Each structure stands twice: as structure tokens, then as C-alpha cells.
Image (spheres, rainbow, N blue to C red):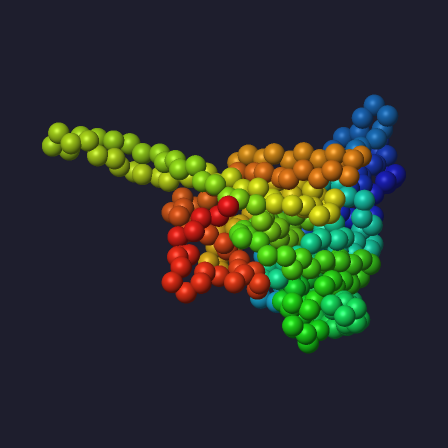
Length: 352
């Protein structure tokens, strides 16, 4: 029995190479992860004397997942790991496998920032996340203020691990730089083998709704929608008569919200929205808490040749029907928002 092809030492799930064996008889193939055997199967050669073990990465993906960032930094201990492959009970190799739901052009040896984009627009008051391998347990930041002065800082990640997630929103970055948030114009966060550039948008928006989601690498990212939000009220219930009066029972609110992205500034915005609309987990920020949502419909159209930008529109509902009604108005207030004047109303405003 000879091994013609095997996975590389570092792999992404979606681009993981198949095992190809040359054998004259059947073999037993097993996969070990975390000290336990999670797969053990027998394979027999085909007419050419070959054994193909295909889409092994899809199986490894089932054992991996990312987590939301808790606090300023978090290690993603379960988003990647060492998988050991055994043939006829003997260890053949160990591969460090990283989660990915779709094929990627990234080099597994130097994955850099685990995101589909390297540049995005951010806004004060909105959290931003970056995931990757911090150099010497530090994410390095560099930026520019309104006067064009160069800024530098670093964010230390405590603990141990391979992949870390850090909250690096404009407010956090400005604090690390030691300047006011309204003076920060742009900044770049460096990880091992890559970086992410954040362009700060200081424009005033009447309403902003922030979503966070897990991208194709199961790493958290955020998007801020500045367009109008509408709600289509709906509910499911049964009815029965009590003493001649019909009443409803088992009411389950199924309101559907539809939101427009607002103006898009970068081509990479479409990649972020594509990740959001096809994510397995997504949440919306309301009154300082993240609420899980289910995206039901989407309208994302883009032109790959022209410079014209089309807004993105999508609909969602609350994953927990008991949380309907918690979205009242802006989830985030921009620093330049003057707010209602004394004596004016403002508590019952609707988005849009």
C-alpha cells in the first residue's frame, strides 16, 4: 500500500486535499481529533487499484466551530485543530485544519486575517472584529488622524491559542491611540500574514442598525445598515369559543423586518453582505444586547464591471419569537447626533 496524495500540514476545510492510496486490498482509515477517534471506515480499491477518500475537509468541518468574541479578545480554540489520520491502525500524518465553509484563495500556511475582505468602512459606536494569528500575541495597529499624523499602538491577547478574535472598533482603536474618536480617520490592524484596513465614516445617519454574523471561516464580523427599516406584522395562533366568545390561543408573533443597507462605498461591501445573508448565525444589536435573527429573504445585485453601486435589501425575523418588539429605533447613536431638542418628542420615532 502506497500513499499517492495526502493532505498538507496546514489546510482549510473547503480546500483540503483528498487522500489517494494505491492498494491491492482493503484498508482501514481512521481520523483522530482531541484524543478520540471520530471516524473509522474500511475502503476497498477500485478497478485501477486506487482508493480515493474524498471531501475529508467536510467531515473535519463538523468538529470545528467559531465563537463570538467575549470582551476585548477571545481565543478561537475550536475553530481549528490537529487532525490525525491513521491507515490500518498506524498514524500516517497530522494536519492542522481551519474551519471554512467555502473554498478560499488564502494560503493555509499564512492565512492572515480570516475574512473575505481586507478593507471595510466602519462607524463610531459600532463594534468591529478581526480574527487571525496575532504576532507574538499582539495585534499591531497603525492609523492617521484628521491632521494626517501617523498613529501606532498594539492590542495584547492574553492566554494561548492559534487563532484569536479582537474587538477593534473605532472607539477601541482611538482609545489605544490615545486620541478622541472623532479625530480618527483610518487605521490598519496587522495579523500574521495579513491586515485589515478600516476607513472611519463620520457622517451623521438618522438611523443605524448593526448586525454581527459568522463569516465563511466562522469568525465574527459586523455590518451597519443605515437605510430605512420597515416591519410587516404577523402572528400564528389558534382560536376557540369560550361561553360563546371566540378567543385566540397559542399566539406566536412572526413579525418580519425589512431593511436597506444604505449607501455602499466599497466593492468589498458586497462580499460582507454576501457573508451576512448566507451566514448560519446572525444577530442584531438592540438596546445594548445581541438578539439572534433568521434572514428570510434577500435582494443582493452587483455588477462586476461597472462602477455603479446598488443598495442591498433583505428581510429577517427574530429567532426567538418572544423578542419581537425589542427593536424600537436606532440601535446605535452616532456621536454627532444632536438628538431631540428640549420639549420635542423622540421616544417613539421609527426607523427610516
